Length: 501
Image 1: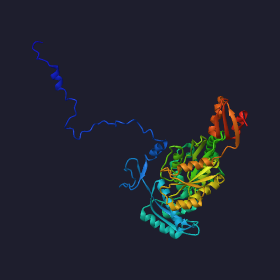
Image 2 (image 1 turned 90 degrees about the vertical axis):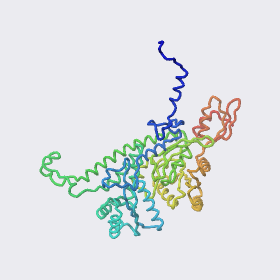
Image 3 (image 1 turned 180 degrees about the horizontal axis):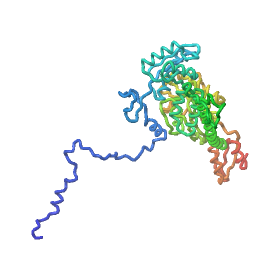
Image 4 (image 1 turned 45 degrees about the vertical axis):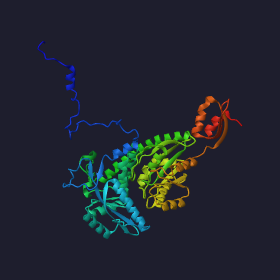
């Protein structure tokens, strides 16, 4: 080792000092690894189930103006669908021109919610719809020219069409024809999430479809002969059961099965409702026109975090949340499915178990969109459904929502027309405190007055009083808690053993 050069540790370390420094000529260089921000700590803790549901719904959206050279759109962009191109048709039988235009505007919103692009809209003044083609022979020819000129592939009629009217229109227009009922059922089928909601929508669709089965002439006839069908043989040949009859029987079998399943689900819902009744828990139902802001109001009042979207029939499945009054009383608040003008009868029947939340409630918050062109029409349409389901006797509080967008003159007109009302904005929080105070004042009050000296070991009774009763005065003494107030009959019975004068 005598020939080894002299080794100096400090000089060697100094030579390696710049090895870990960033290069100076790395402009445009980018790491292949994803760099997370320094404050990244997983998902947003404030994200609610409604936000997750909305993100899932927007994961696959139809886009407007998406065209390709191929007619079968086999090369469209990934996870994007071409919009269905529709023309709207209405028949104006009563009311003003404004009413007819508002009805068509609502039909356009329904069509866009279902995933279509509205190209044109026409309406006709008639005393009653034409029994053969809904709009008459002359208007049908004009509508066929509009369909050909716009390139539409669907015509949507603002009314419920008879099977013969649907068939005649399709034969003459050479495009698909649907009515308002089928359009609403399609939206419900897209937005139903729970098992009960999907079963209710399927039941409504099958009830609607059963009367509108169509075939292709003689090809739907079946003939029995020879040794088929159990060896009918001689005397058994001839026109057999038609395909339409077979389909109708299968639909009836499926409807019966769905009714049994919904009856079982109704039992579960009734059990939960009876449990709330047993504990004397008041219930409040939020009902109203679709897209009036019912879910937003529920989120404001209870912090439920349910899905909120500016679309018709955004939420179908009812949501019930437990909340408390300012003095500690417990009550429930339920969001229900929205209503619309000419709500299909099949939907009312199928969703009757869900709408019982409104019928069995102690108070109905009737939410109205104050920024809508015709809020009075919304109120009338909702009350019509209330009468149909037997909820017109339930105490009602009108909640005029969207005060931040509404015309003050319209709000004043509605307040004058509906004295028992409150103006709020679920978006900004305006009027929410007043609405909450009105709700608490409308809740049923306990009916039995009491005065009791409750021992300290019976703290469970004091807890029940805070949750279910009204406490006028409460004093802690050496013998126990002296409390006066009002309670329900069963709770007053438990307090009778400790009653004082």
